[in-house]
Amino acid sequence: AELRLNEGNADSALKAIGATEGEGLGPATIERRALIVASAKQRLGSAGGAIAALDGLQGEKIDLLRAAVFEQQKDWGATENALEAAIAAAIPPKGELTEAHLKLLLRCAGAAERADDHRAMHRLRDGYGERLGAGPLADTIRLLFADSIKNPTDLPRAAKEAGLAKAVPAALATMRPH
Image 1: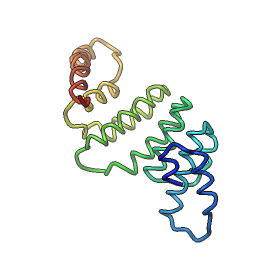
Image 2 (image 1 turned 30 degrees about the vertical axis):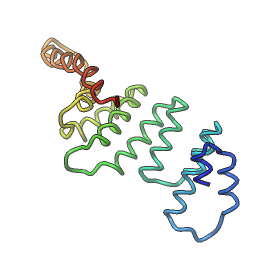
Image 3 (image 1 turned 180 degrees about the vertical axis):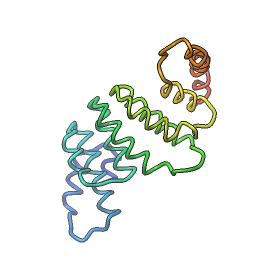
Image 4 (image 1 turned 45 degrees about the vertical axis):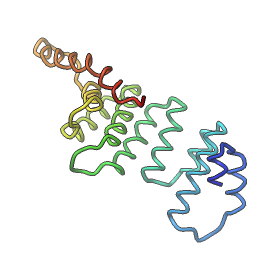
């Protein structure tokens, strides 16, 4: 089923997985089958079927696929919730954040921003803001986490953030494969 899905044949993948149903499957096999079914249904345009296939399951891969389905539907609140669950599974409570962690945080912050979910932005900033490190991804996330200007004392901070914003496109361009 997975091979057929990777070949781009979602219908055939669903038929293959349907022909191999059985009882007594281990958790890893159940997760893998759910990911295949959900991916196939997503490719066939059945967002509801994809989400239903993931129902009751948790884990980073499950939550990332769930987020992708919600992103495709432009359901930013549900996308943000799924990405926060993926972050909880993927990012350890302490230590430096990797580039993969930063990309996941950026994706989640973007979804939270589109959902206009200020509480989620504060949760992300409070949970991970001190661990962002340096570089263009970290600077981009800092910009998304920044508070709005509320009074004149916020202007120096805003000027610093404007400098970050100017540098981000050029820094991100250096990260693109050539």
